[in-house]
Image 1 (cartoon, helix red, strand yellow):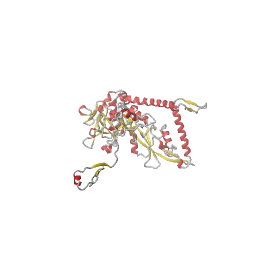
Image 2 (cartoon, helix red, strand yellow; image 1 turned 90 degrees about the horizontal axis):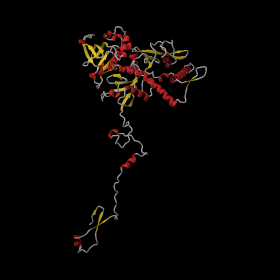
Image 3 (cartoon, rainbow, N blue to C red; image 1 turned 120 degrees about the horizontal axis):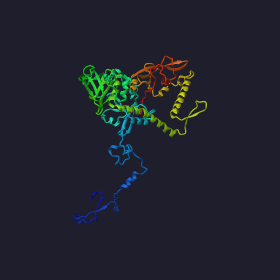
Image 4 (cartoon, rainbow, N blue to C red; image 1 turned 90 degrees about the vertical axis):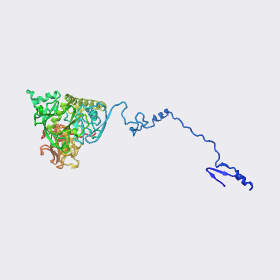
Length: 524
């Protein structure tokens, strides 16, 4: 009999006689022999201790590339073995904010805790390579509620952001705003005499203009009064109420237009609120007109029940109320902001010109060959830039005139030269054009050109004048086989829209005011 167990085999001894078989079975011995030859003993390897210096050398090798940490939230940058380049310097205390352009694209910026709106705008001007430094603003938007306001230049951006709700859709927008300080330039347009409170009668010897100018210089404005529609919080109905705006706050009269103390009801404190313009107020709130604004507490996250929504009869009335709110709240600070806005851009422009010349124009000079005695070197940087623009415009006019000759086909004519200009906005609607002009400031001379939606191959010039937007049809016509554009039935002809704009920037023509400020769309 034979049994096998694992790798071992039983081997029996020599056969015995039959008599001794039982004895052998009772005391048989088994010999176990391995199937493979016996090998010498194997020495196991022992663990090797890796010293810290060895780890340091492996990571500091120049052959290993820098790998950004894809999961920075799982480990701290100081103890992470992965090199991380997405963080600012460890000694920096800057914060990240996101700013949107008018094309809904955004740009992220690192700003210091005390950065003001003016400083953030200057930073965006540099990073976005804007062509000019003036009249930029930072807007605070609540898209779902239709609220927007222009931040004052001195406001701290992170403090404003700290009042936002975490789950809200609030955002910052970077855009032009020409009307931020327009009430300092044209006070009578913003504060009509009919809205100035009778309490100003103490200044009997002053005219309305002199009174307003004196008050603005002192950092305040006259008391404002007038009827406004107010939305009742419990219902969708609107009620017409007579309001008074004073330095001490906003009041409403419980009896008509009476200003007796027993008829005045306290509404809001000016120190603890912000004033917003309301967009699309008819659809969102059922407002009786489009000239709606809103006041809300400035320190708390926005809630619909905290909004005080007011509606005026005209754009001039709304502008008067919102400007008075700003002046009563900030006082002399707005006057300081206005003075800085006039001086700062000029200093930045001079510095930009001098830096540009030292870097790339050291071997180039501007020459003027208009005189008979030969050319002269233009030393003034502003005059040099002006000469360059004039030369470019003269070349464009010559090229446009050549292409408008009758012997050229229509395909070779410069029909799309206006599409490269910042004031051209394509096929936007009439309502959208008015909204764009309103957002960038209802100042005299703000304009844009768009394609007409009612007349084929025609354009429309949308122009702001006295807080209203007017629209002028630009019609193509032919004279002597050449194609022109006109706004006055062919009395004045222009070879293209660019020449039309340049002409009306100097001459009013049939317009009430010259073209001054192009309505531009900012892309970040």
